[in-house]
Image (cartoon, rainbow, N blue to C red; front, side, top):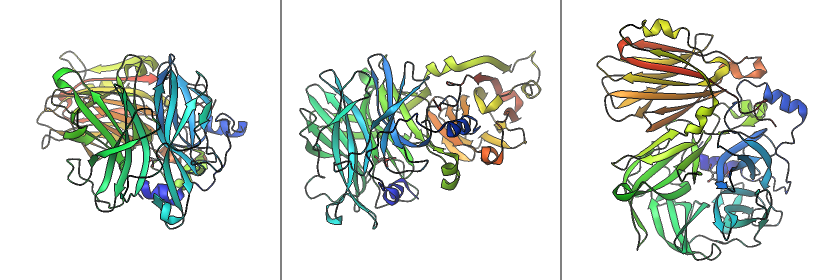
Length: 516
Ligand code: FRU
């Protein structure tokens, strides 16, 4: 089921106004979650229950604030609130109370959907999509059972800690552009350019597929629709496997990256379970965007990412890492979804997007265990036997040559089962297969593979350019009495092509898998 149908089938059953404390889970639940070996130990996730998209990430008054789509009722999508966490370094997080909840009788009575932070006169404002039930003729989302109206709303922070918010009574954007029939109308992302605010919005139509709408404003309150910034029809975007007339290009965001002649504009958006980037030129006068390059932000379990600038002005990408196991399993586990590690975005000289996990994450590393290939060295394979990632919690870095013989790097559990395989074949040196998924890697020489293993997730970044997030669920989790396992790196194929391999244990960011 694609994400849009998923949203449509589950949306907003309970329009509750509860401002529940994210930390308020019964002690027995917290204890169970703290002992769940599948629950990550150094990724951000809520104390319990469901999370999806990152919302309004912002560095504010010396702290990183992360908000996210959150269901306080359980580990399944629905009743969308904004969860909240804070960090001094983008790595160690403190859980905070829910920031935004649906208001009964308000434009967001059926859910507070995704949105973005903007700073106006020294205050943070959140622009987000409110959804409420309406008769079918007025709806922007319909699924037979429900019909919902999406409008773009504003909430203004009332304190420096961003814990208290005052919502404006009326939405800033109440309806799609005149005459436009939409499949969806959501996820506002405003930014300031000189004295003018611009905003991208997710939409799509039956005739033309997914689209990103561009608006303009002087004050974040009154908005004028300018034009379609990008759309599926005629796009250079990576083709979808299954074209879908009902698609929406969700969570779009548009920003400038690089400097001088290397500067480009980048548009990111998500649709049908995958997230894409387009880079190209923005004509400043007309605000028309001409994409020149395109790609996927991640080839695995990763959706609806959002960016922010960090304390030093780098562009950071955060993504939602969904579950890939059945709903019944994650519902029973009591938690679902997590936030990716922060990834720093840059552009290559030819305008292609590059990414690397922020070096702040290296502060979690314990002692390095290393194998090097060299004349006096042992065969790498025999040295490797000593290398271990205990408790499914560690980092691995490997550099290998792409030569004339195939090779495979894998991570094998205690049972002998391989949970991660990165395979190279000289038949196509411009890609590696990550658990069978083909991931492009440019050049033909040395290749760097980095893997962050945490509970039931592995974030894989290849050559600082392509990512593939893998979920793995050894033995079905604690319900089956499973224990955290030790993972062993294995190398097969051309031994001489493995140049260097290091593993580190990673320090958990909390005592109890972030349940407090
Ligand atoms: C993307 C998305 C957004 C929407 C939110 C609702 O995952 O469908 O388009 O605002 O999730 O939770």
